[in-house]
Amino acid sequence: MITIKGLSKAVQSTTLIENINLDLEPGKILGIIGPSGNGKTTLLLCLAGLLPFEKGRITIGDRSITAEESNTDKESLWAFRKKSGIVFQHLHLFPHLTVLGNIIEAPVHVNKIPKADAEREARRLLKQLEIEQHMNKYPEELSGGEQQRVAILRAIAMNPEVLLLDEPTSALDPIRSGDVRNLIREFANSGHTVVIVSHSVRFLRGMADYLAFMGKSELIEMDTADTLMANPKDPRTREFLRFSELN
Image 1: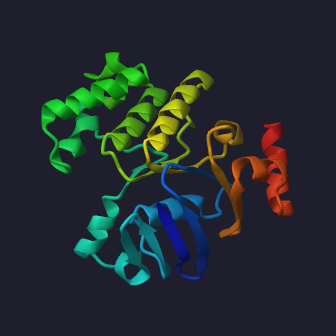
Image 2 (image 1 turned 120 degrees about the vertical axis):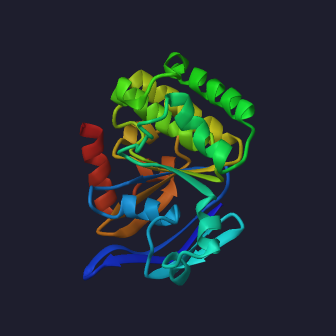
């Protein structure tokens, strides 16, 4: 479960996000759409506890952080960060570890899962995305799409309460995008909450339970995915969706 109340973030005189409010129950997928530069990635980083904010409160499950707590290095912030797993657009795989090593690193050293159990789960995930043959390769030996799938599996292997994805299909072809869609849907169906920032309305269609449109650092509107796509209330949302269908 995610609850955001009055979330605002600014850098000097530039507002990145302003007065964001939303609720998302467990087992649901939220897709966040909107033009570039309107705070979508900033919102993900705040949700992950990786970016301090000036106003508001974020709650994930039984953990909350206030604006004041987000600016500290207290134990409460570290406990909050463990609630979510994030996949950055630029991936940040460990170059000195193999694919298998990347996936099991955090489960073994952070979650204290026995190595054999972590490897067994990693192999299952790799097989699901059809890249088990690459498990002993290093990131530099993989294509961009393969690296992207490994980054997603690395986050899922931590079994986070909330999974945060920033443009998860930017390097994937349509077939691999479908594989990732199925994996994300399965993860949500097991009771996890998923938030996806994506420019691809096509990727989100039929998978996201809810859609939120962000523009000018604000959450313009949020509704069920079917409702927002069929009947957006705000003209800015309608225009964005119209252009998305053309591209």
